Length: 375
Image (tube, rainbow, N blue to C red; front, side):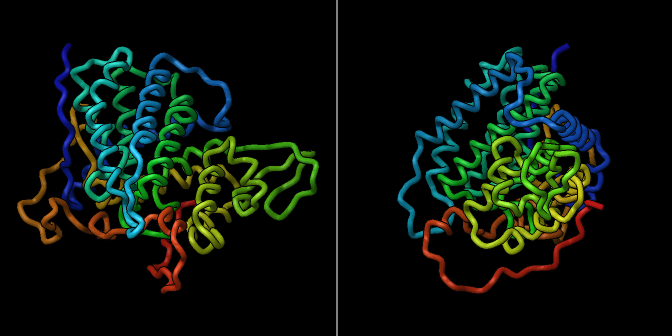
């Protein structure tokens, strides 16, 4: 039976549509997929052996090609600005041009699906016009993986490799792009998010740490719990530089903490209070379950993110049409509700800040942190 593919497009512009989306088949598909990938990562180190199918190897080769494009597209001289480097647009255009041929090498892929897959793939690297990146672009990469599995390029047996090989490779490339082109954080939540750009590495990273034990010879410190010659590394361990250094090689969560510490000064308590709050949770099991709830609430449940979500023939929209008129609409073709800061508010890159001399100024201010679901 032939499948009719379509180029994905935005469909959601109102809160009523968002509510309908949250009870839709597509929403359930996304949540189930995150949960399945999460389960496959429990207790797994980044370098642990895992099954790598031809589909996984082809995807990794594709990602290598994207990284090579970035390496061959240097930033232009832009020292006068702390905002995104215009060379990112050249990188984006090169990726857009390469995408069809890169997909042609994926085993078993119906090439009629390439335009649909390409929409998610190209927009997973950032916004060309604003030169920014956030959890919505990260969600596009997740959607690309959902589509690849739907089209049988990969299978459920590949889930562990999709997390520890494919998704982690994607994050590593994004760090190259963020540091090379000074991508601005999408939106302006600032310190009220997990980090400036990503969510899923913390979610999958906390899954890796569930029930983790490691042998130690040193006495326990306040960040750890000794028992029977082993030390259980609690979430509070993110404040211990030695623990972060050691575990960053094997666990996404600690690698992300190390990354944040490398580009921001002072304590996590100051520049990343959400992560600091989460570190008070007693177990990684609670952190992980809370991350899944938080992803549903703060990414899949937020209009400023989902109004940019792309619906096609695989991830379909079956909700109500947008209202004929709405006061929340702006001229940029989507609604601004809730935080109201999904776009149009430039936020300097932290990479740019560390490249320039720090100037005294007002401290970041904002509303109190909303309760997080980690209890």
